[in-house]
Picture 1: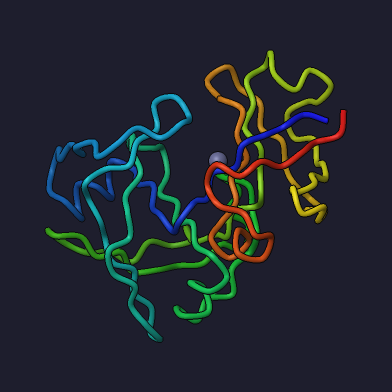
Picture 2: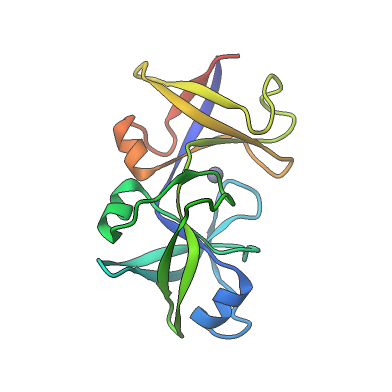
Length: 185
Ligand SMILES: [Zn+2]
């Protein structure tokens, strides 16, 4: 068994340059609150609000750096609050993704096709998890012996071995950041 540490992802937003300019002002640069474990990724000091016809969620953390596309990652609970029926997707897969109005300190804009629920996934560098390939789909077991199905493996030299799971799934499987799950070789 390979032990993998878990990191729970709260709702968050990745933004493209164009949306940053509208929401925060032209050429705005994020300031770092803290590094995240994946190399180059950081929680910023900046937040936005997300608005639909049904509700608004405030203080949603922006994760840097700026990306090529804007992506909003929400839990099932969040999507129910906003009245959005979100698909469960890999990062960057926007099939059936939903629209939301993103409100920043300097402006707001309706961003089309940006909201997803992130699939449970494991990051690994290319030298880790040698028995597995990028895009493999696996089961992992928690310390309680519960099996989590349909976990997607993402390999890249920039990645560090870690499983990402959203707040709803962390509750369902009794996991917190720092918990371990186990992958059969
Ligand atoms: Zn991740």
